[in-house]
Image 1: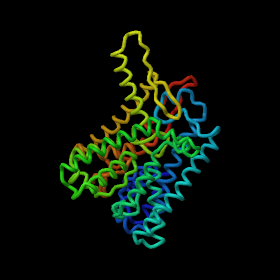
Image 2 (image 1 turned 120 degrees about the vertical axis):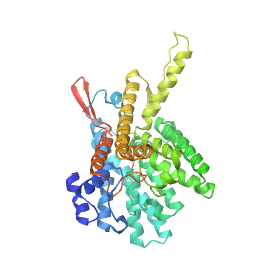
Image 3 (image 1 turned 180 degrees about the vertical axis):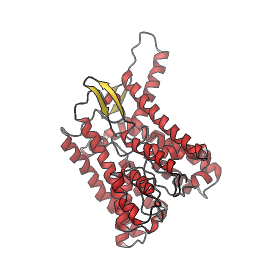
Image 4 (image 1 turned 90 degrees about the vertical axis):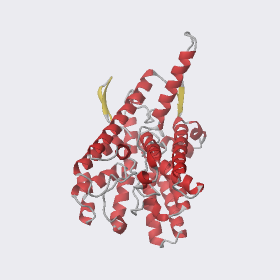
Length: 413
């Protein structure tokens, strides 16, 4: 699929090599958003539509495949892949569930495209351009893919309103589809109680505060509003693993400094919700591990005979078991190992460690933010070594576990 999907890219003349074209297509399929395409500002409408359809269909398809697997009676899959929302069912069967997912997605498609198109018209864009840009930016935001029709990404629009609308869409796209369905069916309290939304809100706030502090100390931006606007947008984009940006790529290095760069890297590494189009370690795993640590602390300070139980709320209350915690730790360590390997590869090619880590985490978590490492002329070996973690990301570090029915391949979003 990647080889064939790269043909339009290659034939357009905007790719340096066929490997560059394959890199961009894999980035689209996996909703990563890194690209090597040259002269993006003059790409034909048809090719831009193709790019965004790849990332939109890739994001929706991954989720549907994940939920399809859920309903095949895989005993113990929730325990093995905690953080993927394995114990939730939107509707009684997979066909109805797939339809529910597409109902939610298409509703957001209409609303999001109209909102962005109207914003584009208010900014003075021609009607056709406003609608196409609205559609493409929506696809990039909802699929947390990060592809944009202009090389300056969402900085191109220089609009606070455009940024606000795109932030709403990319945060919504990064949420678990079970959360969307809960809100759709009237259970809006789930949004406040769910461990993923709580975890996301806490880590997003902390990362934004750190980035804001770093930028304030550096004196990069002229006023507090601009400073917070830039910090929040990049952190939210990284945390949702979307990859939209309202700053130049090299600004992460030249203006944000080590602390700002690290804050964004951590946000990308964590990622957003399970059973969504987002990548990363996932908020539910962070919630499970945090609860487990607190549980151990309570056990340490409680009498020996005290019975200590910890629970998380994810669609329903789930009691933490040792197996659940081990699974969360196992997948987290796997992701951290993947990120570390990517960083080492970058340093071997002469990049600063922080820059290599930033780019490596961006590829491994399917985010797409870049500090300038991914660019035309990038070494072929690095391209291949980035394609691999990009492909592994949507498979969520696939593994095979022994279960009652033998070896059970678990390939889940």
